[in-house]
Each structure stands twice: as C-alpha cells, then as structure tokens.
Amino acid sequence: MDRLYLGVEIGGSKLQIVAGKRSGKIERRWRATARRDDGRAAIARQILAGIAEIRQGIELAGIGVGFGGPVDFRSGRICRSHQVQGWENFDLRGWLAAETGLRAAVENDSNCAALAEATLGAGAGQSPVFYFNLGSGVGGGLVVDGRVYHGAPPGEAEFGHLRLDRSGVIVESRCSGWAVDRRIRAAACAHPQSCLAQAVAGADGGESRHLAAALAQGDPHAKQILIELSDDLAFALSHAIHLFHPAVLVLGGGLALVGEELRAAVAGALGRYVMEAFCPGPPLRLARLGEDAVPIGALLLVQ
Picture 1: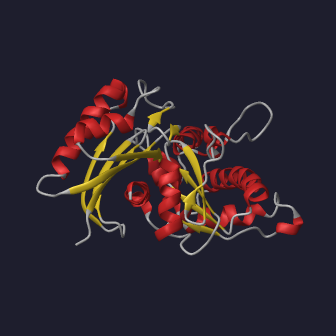
Picture 2 (picture 1 turned 180 degrees about the vertical axis):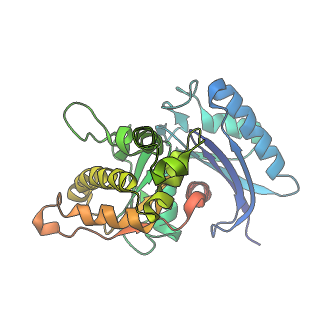
C-alpha cells in the first residue's frame, strides 16, 4: 500500500492541507482562509489545527510545504512573506518537525506548483518547464529534467519581481489578482452602467473572478483590461524565454480561471517581444491541476 504524505499550502489568502499518495492522488483535504491580520502566530495555529484534523486515523510518512514567499529550501527557513507579518527568518521545517513528529520539507509555493505541473500536469513529459502563477501575488518556477531549478542562493525564478520598466513597476504590481481587482474596480467606478460594473456590484474584493463573465458578454472595459494584462505578461515572459528557452510555458493561479481567452491573448502577444529566431515562442498552456498544484507539488517534494 502506498504511504500517505501531507502536502501543505501556505498562501497570502488561502491555507490548504491534503493527505495524498506519491502518485499525487489526494485522499483527504482541509482548507481555510488565512488570518492575515493576526500575523504568523494565528496562521501557525490554523495550520496545526488543520493537520490534527486531517491526520486522524491515518499513518503519515512526511510533510511537504509550499510557502508563499522566499524560502531557503536547504534549511527550511522562511526568508520573508510579502503579505503576512512575522515569518521573517522563521524555521518552518524545524517547527513542523517538532510539532508533528514528521520529517518535513519546505519550498516556495510557486516552485511546488511548477514541480507538480511539470511532473503530473500541463508540462508532463517536457523539459524545461517554466510555470507562472497569477494569484494574490505573482510567482514563477523553472523545472529542468524533473527538478526545481534554484540558482545560487537566495536565487529563485522570481517572475513576479521582473521589472516592466525602469521606474520600478514589477509584474506583480500589474498582473496579480489583487492588481486586476483594482483595475476592475476603477473601470466599474468610471463606467457604472457597464456589464463589468454590474457583474462586480456588491463585491468586496475578488473582482477578478467576474472578468471571464464580463468578457463573455463582450464588455469593452473587460476587454481592455485583458489586452493590458496579456501585453504585460507577454513582455515579462519574453525575458524568461530568452534566458531559459523552456519547452513549454504553463499559466496557473486564480486568474488562469479566466481560461482560454487569457491564454490565447498572452500567446498572441508573445510575438511582439520574442526575437525572430525564437518566434512564435514555446507553447503556452493552462495549468491542469488547478488549486491542487501547490499541495500536490508539496507531496512530490517531501518524497
């Protein structure tokens, strides 16, 4: 019988814990909204409560974690969180091992998702695979021959922190879910009679969830947001293409739920920024594992 492992996702908004097999098959699941305002201590209590609940009656062989921020994967120590206070220099691997009695491995969440998509998802059978996710923040991960590429410490594939211009505008400030939420709120305020405004009426955050519906109705303001978003992403991805020459690009995260229209818009814009010798660029695919990418990657990581 396959042994079971725990895969944990610690994001800026979402916490998720799964119990699963080395094949990536998930047997149990626990989810919660991160209590961000109370910092690390509150989130740590949530994680322990979730682990206690999900491990009842089963024997576990280890625990893997995908953390939303820079991580020293060698030591399992958190460098920092860009969204939650109190994680700086925290020994997450040591803390989990002491609290659970399990061997633990810790990695950046985007690297976990990249590993999952490269192994079991949209990039399976390809190498290198460049994965990028558009969620609360923007992250990236490069997997070469089945292994996460880290570079020299503290290097990672920090796709979200690539600059879009010399003034310091970065991908995350323009292309994250929160950034798109802000654009939608501004468009809805300026055009209160639009389909987009009606779709997000009463929403208190998470407006980007309604972008696909507004696009389906042909809303011109939603279309303009899509054009600007895809152009920014294509420009940033051109740097990853020129440097890493991936066999495939994989788009994940909450904004990937916009679906084929976003994928096609980004893929179509790549040709403007990729040098002629590399045109049309590698294929761009939507992530296949959805919200399970990070915890499945954490399952693979701990093995």
